[in-house]
Every structure is written in structure tokens, then in C-alpha cells.
Length: 221
Image 1: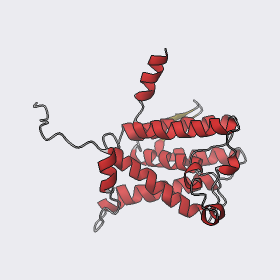
Image 2 (image 1 turned 90 degrees about the vertical axis):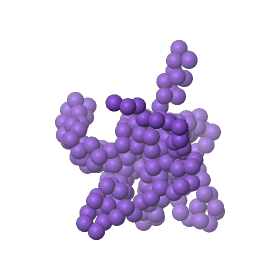
Image 3 (image 1 turned 90 degrees about the horizontal axis):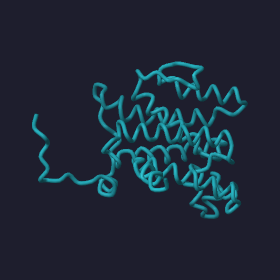
Image 4 (image 1 turned 60 degrees about the vertical axis):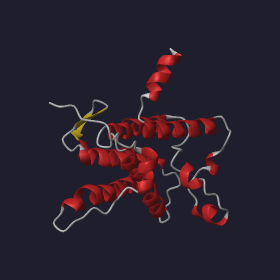
């Protein structure tokens, strides 16, 4: 049983596995009172004046205490992060990591002008937005209650936030960052006079992408 679970765990794509595991371990550490949420949230003053640099990362790893919100976010994170990594980013780990870095940096910069203290949920919405725009014909079945095309999913999630009495600023932040990435990566390069503005650094390709075997020959039809 343990070996089977370990095998299934190792079958999860590396980026999805690493991010999901980090989020679960962070939440577990808070639940066990090893750390407190006050050590994790995004606070520019503490980052700049007290050099608490870790907050630039931990604010993306904590969705709140164990409960419905955590389970909702972690399930969406796992599903859509894996769909992206197994889908349009399959064999392009460096490009996927670059999406993480681009989204994280832009979200942090925009976070300076908002009252968002935990950026993890916005990051999940960003991943959902990118997936939804690249799979526009997929029909979403949400809890067996709503059926709609994939591009509407991020906005439906924002609607649920409103119904639950939560601020939609987090959702709009994720949608905005996701749209900037989608526009620069998928739309602008295909426009007349457009060009590719987002280029994955060679360092990331060296670290995450396996070099092609020069002796490899593709199978013949």
C-alpha cells in the first residue's frame, strides 16, 4: 500500500508535485503550531525593513487554516496545475517554471498596491485562467450544478467569492496576471507586427529541461 502511494506520488509531474507538497506542508506546520500565519503573509514593510525575504515565497504557500477554503484551493491547484503541466507544458518544464516566476513576480508587484496578504489563492486563479484560455472548448461541470465553457471558470470562481461574502480582489488579481501572461505569450506574438516578448532564460532550460540525445532517431512511419 505504501509503495503504491509512493509510486502514485512520484508519477505527479515535478512542478505540480513540488508546489502542492509545499502548500500542504506549510498548512500542516501552521496546524501543528510549528509556525504561525503571521510569519507567512505578504507584508512589504517587513520584507524591506526587516529583510524577511521568505515572505515573498511563503505568501504563495498558505491558503488559510485547514477547512473548506484550504481543500477547495488545494484541489483546484492540483487539478489545473497538473492539467497545464501534463498538457500544453508537457516536456517544457523550464517554460512552466518561467510561468511560475513571471506570475509570482508580477503578482507580488501588484500586491504592493492592494490589501492582499496571502497570494496563494490568486496564484491558483492565475493557473486556472491560463488553462481555461488554452482550452476554450472544454465544458466545465462544477459540482454537477453549473455547466459552462472553460474561459468562464475564473469568473465563476470570482462569483462564488462574492456569494460567500469574500473580497473578489484576490480573484481579480489572479485573472489580471493570468491575462497578461496569456496575452504576451499567446495573443501578441500572433498579431500583425507582434513578436514574442516572453523568453525562458537559458539557465532554467539548463536546470529543468533534459538535453536531447544526439543519437536519438524518431520512429519511422
